[in-house]
Length: 93
Image 1 (cartoon, rainbow, N blue to C red):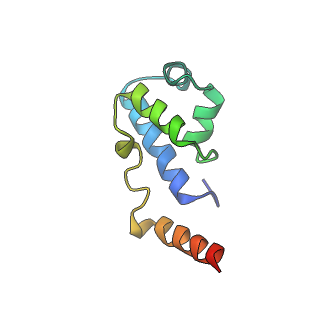
Image 2: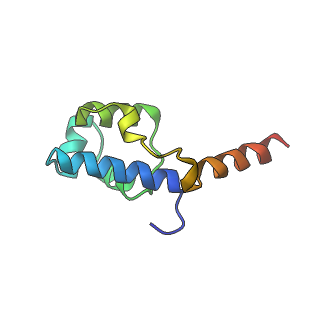
């Protein structure tokens, strides 16, 4: 998952974990969520930055809350919160 955003990587891993727990293919999840299978693949690989609506659709399709999909995305030990705060600080200057 290389140099991609750590928060997106974690979100993608959470989506994949929940999808696999439900024994769904990416295609089946995409159909349930009214999204394209390549978009689901991109999310799972941390390559896509899904909208809130897309996260809501995926959560509903998986039968979980959005907070379950976002678990550990803002964990201070993974560096995501620091990166976001630094980005906001730079933009406010």
